Image 1 (cartoon, rainbow, N blue to C red):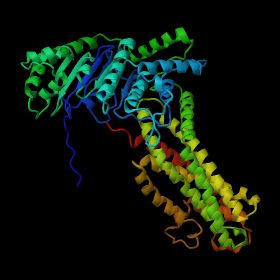
Image 2 (image 1 turned 90 degrees about the horizontal axis):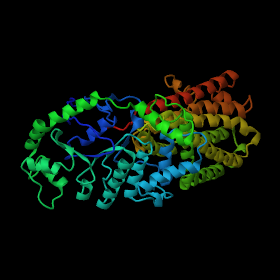
Image 3 (image 1 turned 30 degrees about the vertical axis):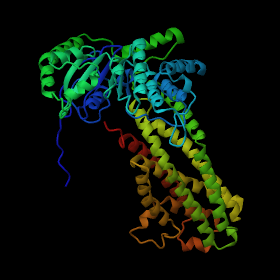
Length: 576
């Protein structure tokens, strides 16, 4: 039996507002709901919640993600891009630029952002992977912050930007935020865990929560919190870190816990005042998201020339621009991963040689032996696409983070990845088949009759593996999920199991198996009409059967591609 779903209050009602150009620290013990509150404010919360969140007194709409930015805890970026390329990617997808703006001008703009975050000295260094040396953890964290600031948002929500960093790196990270807030007027709401004294002093405001459930115990200026604690009868000891002292007092179960006192003090003295201020500010509406975007557009037009009108869409640039930027990045990532490229083509060469030796001059053997040669050729093509699933799942994780920030649409990512990966897969598979064919001794004039069916079969299986990579939550589960489908189609292949030998209740599988269609059509193209193997296997050599084979295989290819898009959009989304 499944356990009954129980409604649980993680965070009780809390009100407040954020001033332009300020840093607000969101602090509290584990389980207090600080990340939950941040996700609600950033419009990233996937679970249901209640409450009202407004931007300058207006309801959030499609444009909210274009005037705000969200910095997740994890630094999720492709490892084979440099720091400059990573930030440029976000810059190009978050800013509509005139057509004639040069690459040098864009590089200068990005370099200015990198300089503000202390990253100019490592601009040409790779982000890095487990096998490729890259920037440090602190630098990677600042790259993530720089990616958020490039769109010149009004508010940036950062979830523990100093997590995992040294105290020195943490301070440098927050100082970068301070500089951006003061120069650009951006507001930052930052979830932070017990910062050092120097970091505490950098924040303008503090929103402090306690847990069990999450309740507000302080909401005001950071520098006024010391007097607030003293007024409650708990002055901060000399030389103590205020943040540590606050946490000791409002963490349930801690030795110095005074949760009830501070919850009651806030509810009686502060909450009514905050609620009244919020009502007043909401009554005086400021600029809408569209107003803000048009203001930025007008400012840029003074220096850069004409720009297209702002569209009521979550994406900042056109589909064409999204395709261009994504294609450029995917191409670079593919070409730079030389180990993967070499492995893919070297494996194809060795497969062709080894199997070619096994089928050396197979043309001199019986029709059954020749047909077994084509079955192996199709089998290798069917299995080739499985190797792409781990990389697809890794890229999917990056895509989920980027699409949640409205950088680009899912279908554009699918188009680009499918195009480049398919070109690589088709070329390596073609290399394998050419080598294998050369060893077989079969006339080259027949290669053009056989290859199109091998090509169609490869497309169908690759599309199937794309669906599985969108459904599976890991590489291991993807392999386990793919195996039954692969075995089903490879067993019911119209060679081992044919329409003549299949049980009546399994014959329908042959009508769906791309291997069965491919091997039948190849046999009809290669062998003479009076060859006994055609009748023995029940092959139907006719133009009608050829049309049926093409239609079914193309329908499966298109169907799998559509299903891939649906699964990619709806499954394995980031849960917050």
